[in-house]
Length: 99
Image (cartoon, rainbow, N blue to C red; front, side, top):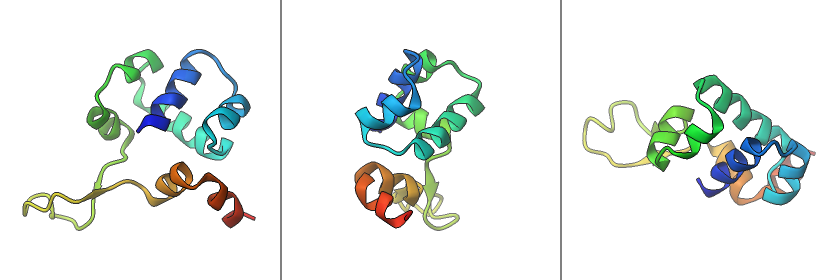
């Protein structure tokens, strides 16, 4: 969530996607995907930054249950879209995979 907040902060300040890519070490493709998700919410960058991590994840549609109905059965496991996890945690690895 830290990197998502960094992206939001840079976008709020008008920093280019290329500069964000270099600073945050996330591909421009991923930044563009997040930008699209941010814009789909219809909420300004500054208002998104005021949200809690959980609210932000819900707004961006990042929280999903592993098994449908698992949350109703008391299963606490959640996961974030694996592409985003891979790109956030292993940016150089995802670059190698995309070649």
